[in-house]
Image (cartoon, rainbow, N blue to C red; front, side, top):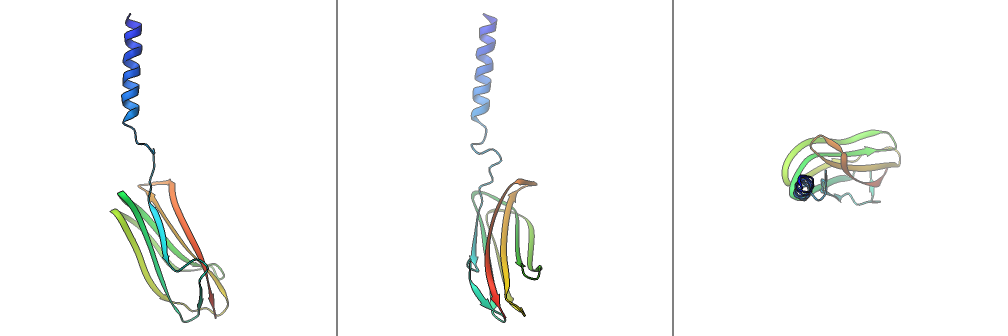
Length: 133
């Protein structure tokens, strides 16, 4: 009889213990939107580049964010944002730059976010654009 009671007690403890675990273990569910520039957009040297990226985690926190604007032709970095944001639900990066190139250049906007010290669940997004001399 004690064996049956022990088995039933173990089942109840496991059932209730498992029920309280998160539905998405380690699930950092932020959404990244690169609003500007648009993917595939063309610019001319001298144009002003608007960079606007939003991070949304409805009902949660935005922990870490990273935004880079890279000239892949010359390997130059135009923008590097690496923030431990720790804000509720919403974070935005909005920057303006004058573009200056001497040759046709391919650029990339890269954005990422991840939970506290847990880059294993990193969420990433990127777009590319061209700048003409």
